[in-house]
Image (cartoon, rainbow, N blue to C red):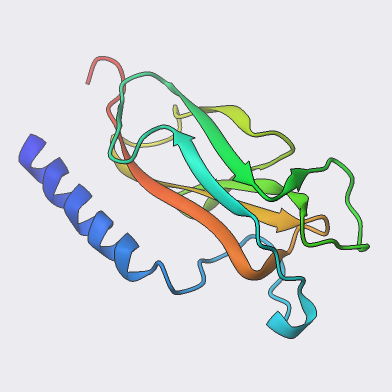
Length: 145
């Protein structure tokens, strides 16, 4: 079982590496790049660490946003440094977050590797151009498994 998890995790890491330059799927509209603001912000996942093993039913997620500001209002008056974070696991939108920290329930997720993604999006919920995305793979091992 452990060998299978390591194998699956390795495959997911390779797939994730290959997709880094390809735009990821988004829960938002897909406007043309010419109409989107360019943001120089950077987003990183502080916790969990890449390849972390999570053995609780919740996942504490913390982001580091540089060159951008989290705002709570939705607007079509876009600026390249204001927006919020879309948090996804395995491509499924978990939240449209107006803060840099969140606790996510993992009870609906199967044991094994999962892809955690954060994207800093503009105030209209659509991506910047280029997209401001960070992602990593973590292993979920529920209590008692």
